[in-house]
Structures are given as structure tokens and as C-alpha cells.
Image (cartoon, rainbow, N blue to C red):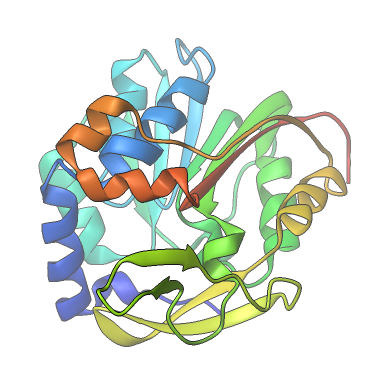
Length: 248
């Protein structure tokens, strides 16, 4: 299934407001780790998958990338990207990842921020990225952490009578597949995969894992956004870095 929830007007306006506030989980937690894990970008050709409003694409360009191909299925997101993060070496293209056709061995680096949990056929997407990367190319992506995506229904944080969070409830972990949730609007679809499924999908499709991280907030981040301290009890994100080493 391909879903373009970001062109839903209500969803988009809420998401836009979330991201425009610099004190958010992406800017304090996920993006710093993504940027730390990126290899040297100077003179490299980068594929940005699910570029959203273009912040990461522009960052790659400013780090010296020779070219950045930035994909997103949402016309609303791409309009924001063009307005906010236009850059001579960045090309924004409207397409779903599943529909994208890449010239083989065209990119040194493929990077994706919080997109893979929307992908139904993970193996097909990983094979497509593998073919698009040059030999020894790097794939770096973040996704919602499997302990967050696992539970199918009910509250994930269990609280006491005063509303204090007692523990995080993990359930249905080994039941991989589709989850339907409400996030600003009803009917948002994502796909749960275990950590082993994420890793083995890379390995069997020609990648070797180089680093896996579950970002934790810094003291400075906690000072800016106190509730992010809950990340010390359970992570929201997982980030995987892999290198193209073989043909699947």
C-alpha cells in the first residue's frame, strides 16, 4: 500500500505546525543522530527518500554534496521544500518511493528520515535502493522504533490514577505487518517490523550493517523539552546504517 497522508489538509497543517516549532523530537533527537552518522558528503551524489520539507536535502547540499535528488509523494511537502530549502544542487521530485525508477549505480549515499514504517514491501524498496547505489554506497535511514509500532491497540503508556507513567506496554511484537492508527486524522497506515526483520531485510538484499543506534536525548535536549526524558525509558526511533557489499 502507498499512502500520501501528508496531502490531507488537516494532517498537513498539524504536521507543519509540529515541525515549525524547533523544540520537537525530530530536531532534538532524530536529526542530530542522522547527521552524525552521515559519511563525508563532499562531491557525493545523494538520494533523499521522503524529503518532506527539504531540511535534510539542504543540509546535504550545504555539506558539499555534488547533487541531491530529493523524493516525496506529497505535493504540499514539496511546495514547502521549494519555498524553504531551494538550493542549486537539490532537485525535488514528486514520486512515491515504490514508484521511483532510478538509474543504476547513480548515488553514493541514500538517506531517509522516518519513511520506512510507511512502506508495505520493505524488501522491494531495499532492493531498489541497492540497485541505485554505487558499489560500496551507504544507506542510512531512521524509522519508528519497533517497540513503538508493535502494539495494535490500547494505550502504550500505562499510567497510575494520577496520570504518572508507570511503564510502556509492548505487545504484538512478533506479529509483523499493517497498523491503522489515528494521528491528527483517522486512517493513518504504517507497518510494524521487528528489529530482526529490519536488519535481515538489509542483509539478504546485499547490505552489511555498519551501525545501529537508538537515539537518546542529551541533557540540553531534556532542558528544552522535559518530556523527551521518557526516551531514556523507551526509544521512539531506531537508525540503521548499511553499506552495499553484494548483489541480492
